[in-house]
Every structure is written in C-alpha cells, then in structure tokens.
Image (cartoon, rainbow, N blue to C red; front, side, top):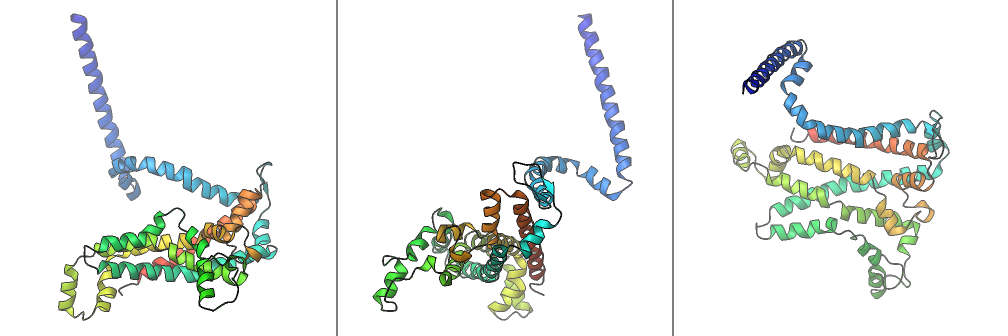
Length: 331
C-alpha cells in the first residue's frame, strides 16, 4: 500500500515537472516568435499548419519534387538505362533549331489554344448563364445533358463514327444524300480536315467541369445586389452582368480559366483517339503528343523533360495573363 502511494506521488511530481517545462518552453518560443512577423504568424497558427502538413507533404512529394526533377533532367541526356549526363541547353537548342516536328507541334498547339481556349471558355459561360435563367424544374435536366459528355469515358467514339471515312459515316452519308459530294471524304486521313475536326471535338469536350463550375458561380451571386444596382442606376442585363455578376463570381472565373488552360495545352489524347499516332503528316501533332513520343516511346527522358518544361512555362505565363485580365472585370 505504501509503495503504491509512493509511486503515485512520484508520477505526480514528474507530471508537475513536465507541465512546468512545457510552460517555460512555450514562453521561450513565444518570446522568440515575437522578434519577427513571420515567426509570430507561424507560432500563432501552428495548429492550422499542423493540420495542413499531410497535404503539404503529399503535394511536395508528388508535385513539387517531380517538377523540380524534370527541370533538372531537361539539362541532361538521360535514356533511363544510363546515368544522366549534363548537356546544358543542348536539348532546348535542338527543340527549336533541329526538331521540325516540334515546331509543327508548337504551331498546332498554338492554333488549338488560341481558338479552343477563349471560344470554349466563352461558350461554357454563355451556356451556364442561359441555363441559370431556366425554370428550376427544367434546369437540372438541361445541366445533365450538357455535363453528360464529360462523364462518358468513350464520348469521343461518337466523333469517329460521325467522321468515318466510308459511306456509313454520318458526315459522309449526309453529304452524299444531299448531293454535296460524289465520293466519301477521308476526314481523319486528310491533312486539311484533321485540325478543324480536333477543334470541334475539343470545344465539345471543353464544356464539362468549366460549365459546371461557372453555373455554380452564377448560383452563388447574391440576388439583393441586383436590387441595389437597380436603385444605383443599372438599367439592363448587360450592365448587371459586367458590374455585378462577373465580379461576384471571380473565383469561379479563375478556376474555370485554369482548367481551360490545362485542357487546351494538354490536348493529346483526342488527336490519338481520332486520327491515330502519329497523325498524317503530323497535321494534328501537339506538344503533348511530342512529349509522349520521346518520354514513353523513345525513353529520351532528358529531351522529354525539356518539352515538359516549355509546356509548364507556357501554362504559367498564360495563367498570369488570364488572371490579370479577369482582375479587370467590372472596372
């Protein structure tokens, strides 16, 4: 009995010592954190940063580290079998001076980005705006109809049937029946039609998440702002759109723009599914196709990393440009 009481007293003394040590340490850290604003901010929000740590760890391991490694590998010759060998800017010089296919891919990607990027973004907003004006009972049905293509894994298959090169393709059948052509057109084997067809399919596919996020942004706009704007002199729907709707949904506009940038610069699988790999005379070849060719087929990882770095820089620059444009909305 005496030994039990003695053990309890010993544990109590140790616990008191621990609490005093913790209090002294906390006071020292608190004083240390007051010396600089950043330290103070980290100390006061330590519980929040602790909760963020798992995500930050995974983000660093699976996003930051691969990007940094790709950037470093872009200055090397690396074929997976041998150790990387530093070659400086040789990969970048080869891309722009010696690789004619990359220049073709760059031109195709630029055309696709300039056309499908802004048009797809505007179409997604227009359809979201129009559907938001529909009666509540009809709105979910129309929303599902527009969003369904992005849910279908083999949605592009319908376009291969439409532009099939035989008389059974819908496009050829329609043109033959109405007398516009005398023989079937080889849509996906003709260099004149490959890129326009890819543009059409990409615009069709670009609604998806963009359309849904913009529709959510429209639903989140405070309706009382329209009443206040009417009192202040806003006279029509266009003024409501520019001065109220768009400024109130800037987060959704930025999110949709980022998704649109990644979709347009990342066009690659569509060209493969429609016209094969590589396309005829590289008419539909994109930067992503070129990256896949050197990274997954030839295993020239240094060269592929240089292509990926250029694509990454282009995405960052476009992102900054779009953010700057969106920040001026409503001014």
